[in-house]
Amino acid sequence: MVAEDTNWRTYVNMETRVANEFNENWGFLTKDAQDGKNVPTNLGDRIADAESQINACGGKLMNTSNRQYGRTGVQLEMFNNATHNIEKSADLMPQPRRPAKK
Image (cartoon, rainbow, N blue to C red):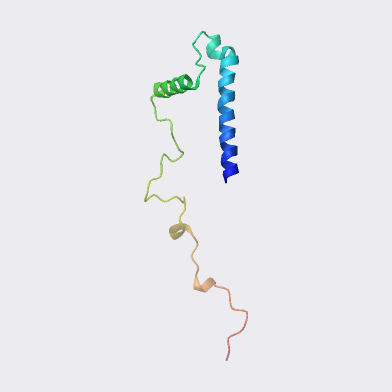
């Protein structure tokens, strides 16, 4: 567990470092920079820029196919067993292999 945690932290730190280095070294090649917009190079500015873009969208960004988030009392199954499952009928039950004792 400790090794997994160390590996995860190393991975996250490396990804963050590489993203920062890319923006510092190659950010001028991005579309925004080519269009003359100011390209944020440090992490805090990039986060603020992303938050402003999210707020500019205005709509609700998180959607699901059924438009529900953890509501209680809502059935998850499309066809629940109580109404859509085939009920066992005594008339259709298989016969025992051994004949009944006399």
